[in-house]
Image (cartoon, rainbow, N blue to C red; front, side, top):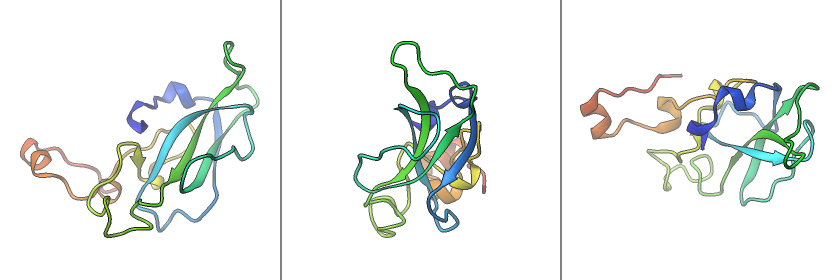
Length: 133
């Protein structure tokens, strides 16, 4: 989903709150959630853990249809690389993963070599390279 998050969807963010130290994380999953408020720790109902969340500024308006606010939440699942370094994502990452060092308010973030793992043979043949950071 991270590739689907556009700057216009997060234009009202004023800060990102990290619930743990991100320096040891190669990637975090990010998603847009419909929440009842523009700030404060959102509820978390997945397996795994919430790693951080975005806070919206006072000018952020709720959706006319639902009365909710669209906010980013950053999370990890039990089978992600930080918990299972030799597991499913040892050399790759989920589609919604981004390098947490590339995230900031109003900035969607992106994949890097650290977050995505080594380029596949197809990527190398096509000359597709990911940034180092």
